[in-house]
Amino acid sequence: MQKEETKKEFFTLLSDTTFKRMFKDEDSRFFFEKVIKYYSKLDLEGYQLYDNEINSGNVARDYRLDVLLKKDRAFIIVEMNKDVSERVLIKNRMYLFLIAGGGLEKGEDFVKMKTALINFNNSLYKIKPDAINVDYTLRNEKYNDVIDDIKIHNIYLESLKNVRYNGSNEEETFAAMMIASSYEEMREIANGNEEALYIVDKLERLNEDDKFRTDYNVELVRRKEINSARLDGYDDGYENGIIKGKEEEKIAIAKNFLKDGIPIEVVSRNTGLSKEELENLTD
Image 1 (tube, helix red, strand yellow):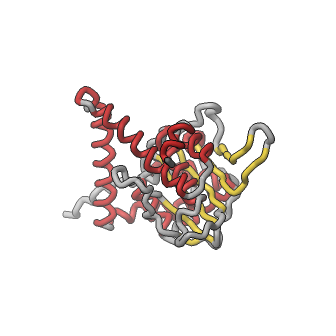
Image 2 (cartoon, rainbow, N blue to C red):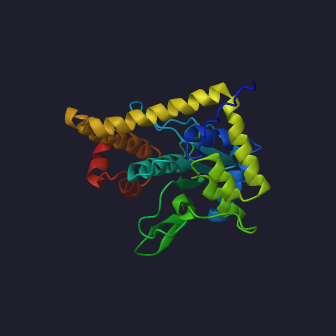
Image 3 (tube, rainbow, N blue to C red):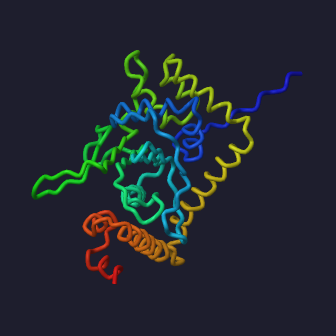
């Protein structure tokens, strides 16, 4: 009697574990590079993976980057945001400004960095739900003076929910596959595109990697624990603990920004701390 084949577990590309694994693999990185170049106009050719385990500077709440790329004095951060919130986007901007301020350089010499942040957001853009890519630069409102060394590119994946490959929309197809909920849906979106189907096959083969399966499921459990705590822990003081933790996190990272020479106005805008609060941190 033929043994029944075990059903393959689905590994979503929205998972940090899956995203990092696929991006680090040179055979599958093209999938993300094409989407990034199409929507942000950033060509990743020549960029090398940097230490993506850089610490935020906050020991108590040790968030880490998803992917960090480096070429000469230019850095690109790529974040896959499965659970999109204002807090997540602020955290990502904190990393951006930390790197822009020379946080990765050794020694006392300040070196100007060209930095970009790419957010893959599993959501719609609230202001304009049909928008896919929303870009930001630093601009002085009074004089319209732009600092073009720091840029943010938000790619809103939910806007691509109904996309299917039609022979000329490969990049949109790749982006749409990131929010698929099954291998069958991914193949439907790919609609015969060979490179897209290659990615699906590669994801399915991860079922044979015991370490990856363990890491993936640990991430799922961690997310469930966080969500459960948010849902069930408010009456036990959890909400107050979260608020306190957020404030401590803001202060710790703000101190790093100020130490690295980031202007106090920029730090205030990206942490929510007032200028007076930030000035007190430097006393």
